[in-house]
Image 1: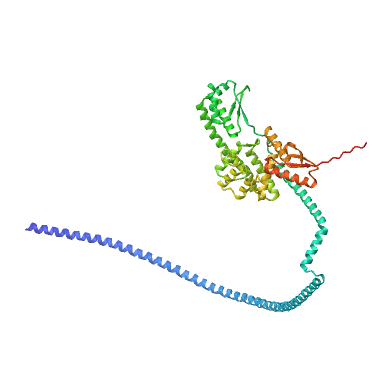
Image 2: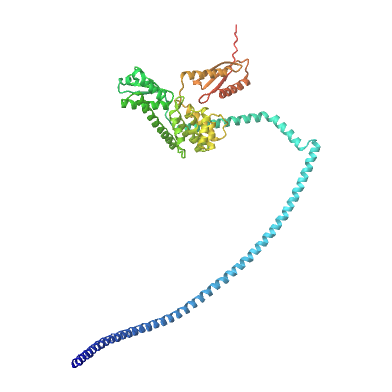
Length: 520
């Protein structure tokens, strides 16, 4: 029992000691926390005092600024009042001047009104005088008509007839002189324009031939070209459409044909085969097809070069290729593409001189013979084919008219079309530009002479100057002086309508009468 009390006592003693220890711990910790809070309060009070000092200082500055602002505003108000007074004085002065000007303007307006009234009165007086004069003139005319027994219109007609009868020869002579003078001036001006155009553009005069020479490395290759029983040469001619001439000419063969494009394809193909060494029908066909494609690309390039040289843009590739094909066509030995480019350069100069549109002329010259690129493939004249090509590629109507009228198949209706036709004649007629065979030349001269001899009264006719002039001798008993002039005109018109010729043909009709007597 005693042990239980002892244990209880010891437990209670331990609890008391533990409680004292816990209380002491919490007391010491609370004191430290209280001191810390007191220190923070003190710091905040110090900061508050500092803020109050700054606020007081700021308030002092605000009061000072307010005082300065009031003083400044008083000065500004006083200055504004002074300026307002000055402006008011100036306005009063200006108002005085305006009032004075207004008075002057009022006086001027009144003066103008007075003058206007005076002018109106004078106009009325003049109108009355005109009316009186008209009436007097009418009465005078009526009196004259009564005396002369003619109306005014009849008198005018009679006077006109008398003047025409009396001075008809004089007027006719003066008109003829004026016409001759104008013709001389116009002809001289036209010559100067054409001469300047030709002088400013100088082109080569070399003509294309109908054959092409291919050089051979040795004569032994001729046997390979011919082949066994002529197989190779036959296959080559069939594939290219040309004739191969192999003769005794050392180191060369001749490719003959009228189509320049075919000859060029044949030349390239032959050179390729000779270089390759394999000459057989299958290889010939392969190489020829390849060269045809190459020549097609070259046509496109030729078309591009021509348009770039002339400053033409916007043509589609198909049209450029057709233009390039003209590089492989000739007319009387003259390369058509070179002829067209030459025409365009000459035509541009002429158009600038006479005030026509140079761009229309240049395009008209370039496309005027475009139909010749396809005339062996399509039916119709080269003019008709050219017009259809231009319509297909939507060429302007002005250029289309130049193409259609350059050989006067239709009436020429524009200055640009006249220039294109003139440039065509200049380019084709210049020395060295074209050539023709002896047979064609003789035929043309005979046609000229026969055309002249077909007229009644013609005794003899001779074509001279390479067919550019025809001299016609007439029977003096059948043809008089008046009929001689009419005959020359009729012969020229028939030549224009029925014959084809380059340039201009001069018709010279000669009437000569000789009377011989003998004195014995």
